[in-house]
Image (cartoon, rainbow, N blue to C red; front, side, top):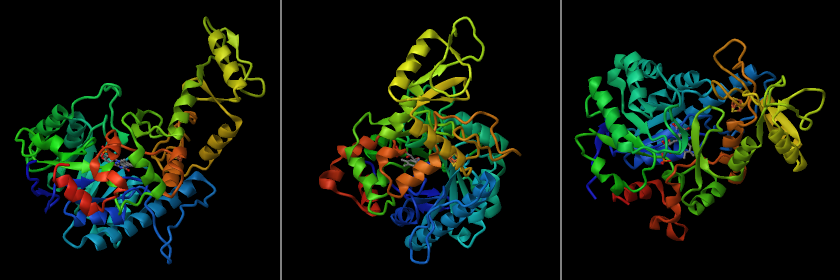
Length: 469
Ligand SMILES: Cc1cc2nc3c(=O)[nH]c(=O)nc-3n(C[C@H](O)[C@H](O)[C@H](O)COP(=O)(O)O)c2cc1C
Ligand code: SF4
């Protein structure tokens, strides 16, 4: 294995190893402080981060506002308070010279306010930069430059970076810390697949990263500005020919799944215990996130439930037409008229006989069938919404318009991501939740590093990664 040397990134010399920011509360002050102290870049997740009461207990993010707008304001406050708290902790652990970034998702509700709130707080001086993906964060460069912070856009194609650079980032080239290429078929969490890309047909990351570098070169960006490869990086020896490769320019690597299993990782024990049980094929790239993005998560019963709900789905028309010739006579109360095909009528009656008695309308003129109990939970979750996303498929909430509505029907094929990520992060059973993981997470069960239940410290993990293993 080649020696892995430090590189210049975000104004510092650091190891080319980055802790991928993980919300909700899957990277925090403790994990990122330890990662930065070990010589890489640590990343505090500023996605609804935890804050603590005087006794050091996590303050549960409970919402008191009666309207969604009021609850959204509470959410922004929780977001800023938590981000500030975690950054302070990270800096204390890492020391003054280490590099600490924060991570926000551009499509999270209040993203800009939370980011600026942290930058303008007493913790602002303790942060070096921001990594940001999920959407097209054109304003990221300007916000960062205004506050004297480095920005690290997360993109999944050269095309996306070209658009960001041309319209906005080229005005603030000096604050570009690195470009994170997050592989949309490999990385855990949300994935930036474009409409032209097939979730079932993964592409080789090398030519895609080369394309990002070509776009950067065309924009006049030096090869010294790193590209951070994120997604599917486990053993560095498998990426040896990327290191020092003049075709790619300076390369660093981001780890998201692997640091989940460390002593400092803030995820609860019950979640850590599931990681060494994962097998190849246990991770699903799926379309159910309320963000509208694909995302990669473990096939827990929760996720399978989502898949099965979408399978219990039929199309309807409100007027009888050529092929929708049969009136639906199950799944709803009152005198609504839905015309369906004969086959779908038979399907619907079958699901109702199995207990999926409630038909729920989707925005695509289809009905999904759920149990009465689950239908109630879904409606309550939608009513409890506090606007954690800028646009939510599941509740129809939209941050940036007057009515705070997407104008589309709430979609019961999705779920409240805020509820489930808060639950899994604070001790909820992973089986009942969305358990994000990258497609290489099955290595936990085969990598000898973890034999006999070994859980490394972050420093031990970083040292191990440097050996190539
Ligand atoms: C549990 C989990 C949560 C994540 N949450 C976020 C997030 O909030 N923001 C983000 O930019 N990336 C998020 N990611 C992506 C990671 O930062 C990282 O880029 C990715 O996991 C790298 O791929 P790997 O999983 O193969 O290591 C998450 C990943 C995981 C596994
Ligand atoms: S319903 Fe959607 S926007 Fe509302 S809190 Fe849940 S995930 Fe966030």
